[in-house]
Image (tube, rainbow over all chains, first blue to last red; front, side):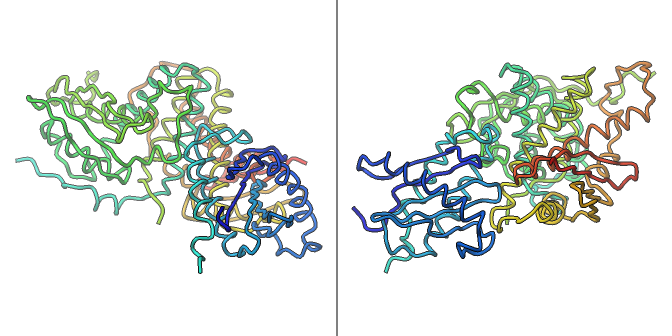
Length: 147
Length: 186
Length: 176
């Protein structure tokens, strides 16, 4: 398995309702990853409600590293419309710039998906175009910084 | 001799007041979605979108003629070319092409590969019978009627249904002689 | 950079949308027509706020979000900002556009065009009809503002005041 990789991404609505969750591993660990995503939501809330304590820059959409586990690093992002993006990577020395870049592209894909007139706000994102775009973004993660 | 109009709408488009296409795209999408809710039947939505387009077309033709300097008295063949090259560019900022002429020059296809109406759009499975861009066929029909051409406009290809382009077939039914628009007067 | 269309596309579409709802689908139910037009605006505002806030930090309070509507959001739509913002500091904001583009462009459009003169001698005087048509047009931008703010986490009611044409004031009342 490649060293640098994203194993799971999630979009979560403002009432912590899952809008999209996709894991990218061959291993049968979807449940574990979903659990990690779920746990990270509390960290996001904590970060946002106590920005000073966590030391993250005020009101930036990128929330940085939410928490490391033994095998994963979990990053968070919160849009102005209170939608959370969570990404779980297996790369333990991931660069901040790569994660920021990932979220920026992911956010653009999300915004286009919810611009579909038939998308119902708060409902799961079922768009095939979105799924394909996400998978492309996930595959290219960290490639720009190789070497 | 009738003056020859511009061959493309680029110059006109760069001179008209323009707005962010997102507003237009999203507004059209919201209208279609609301019509589906209110009218329930997809067939009825197709019909109403066409009607809305027709109403827009009969008004938009004046602006088109004024800005493009196209003469009213051109034949169907030139008219179709002008719609594709000048009309689409001038309003939507995209160029269409004309193909598939029949032998007697009364039926052709207008092909659109880039269409701002459908940016972001994915049809749900429940709307497979929907002609999402049906407003366009109405606009063409309405505009042509104001220059005395009765037409029938139908969709042949639709990218939202998996085709590689949008294709509208425009069939000239009859060309009525120029007359004053206010026929009921006196 | 972004894609553009001619302004007459938007104008024609809005005019036709309003007249379809008011004169055809809900001809005798203006309040229903109004609600539908507002709903269309709401969806558009909801989606636009998502797009236009993409590359910016989160707003820390209501005032910041309202200012965003007055400046960046309005500029994207109308190439100008809201001219005047007032607040009573108790959740009501008044956003005044001194020359609201959609009204300015609309008044050029004579409502008698299109030959649909089916109302032979209805009770409503022409000015009344015109005023009603104007107010119908305003449900759309009111819906846009409400949709945008609601997506930014600010539930509110939005109404329009045109007692001072061609200026138009949008009154935003934030729900507690």
